[in-house]
Structure formats: structure tokens, C-alpha cells
Length: 144
Image (cartoon, rainbow, N blue to C red):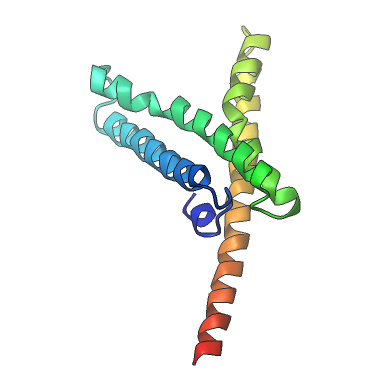
């Protein structure tokens, strides 16, 4: 998400800038729930439930981020659809679970979808990190 913020993948609007801050915040809180669960796996207190709720919240916000990147054309070609694919994880998981209830397969399908979607998101981030690093180096060389 930090790479997408730096390259303005969600466009130049105020909404585009703030939605990336919101997703970073919700992902941070969702990961705090992971640390909490690691040290206290049986805890089902209200603070833990609140922190854990940031996983589906962050997934819903990722859907908004994906739509924003696609509409703003902040990434080139096929890459602009990758955040949307990652953002569709929650609707995909819920639909798969509903349609295939009572079958052990949904978890495997959702796991594979998640792995592919988030790996593609990482690849797009790496591509743009390298492009960003290259252009920064070129600008530095031109200044000196």
C-alpha cells in the first residue's frame, strides 16, 4: 500500500490519497489482532473482537481501493485490475462459502484465490518500486 501511495495509484484526488491511509490503518489494526491472538489465542474479549473485526473491514476497504485504482487508471494496463482482484477476496470468499457450504473445498479455493491475488499485488508493487528507484536514481544523476 505504501508503494501505491508513493506512485499515486489511486489518483491525485483527496479521496485517492485518504483511502490509502485508511487501508494502511485498518491493516495495521488487523495485524495487531494477529499479535494479540499469538500471545493470547483463547481470548475472546471485546478488545480482541474489535481488533479482529478489522480483517473484514480492511478487505472491504481494499475493494474500494481496487475500484479507485481501476477508475483513476493509476496503474498501467493489466496492473490496474490487480488491486481490484485482491479487493474482491471477501465477496469471493463469502460467495464460495455460501454456494459450497458443507463441502471442505471452499477453504482451499479461497486460500488459492487469496494467494494468487495478493502475490500479484506484491509483484505489481515490486515492479513499481524498481521503476520508482530507477527514476529517482536518474533524477539524482541529472542533478549532480
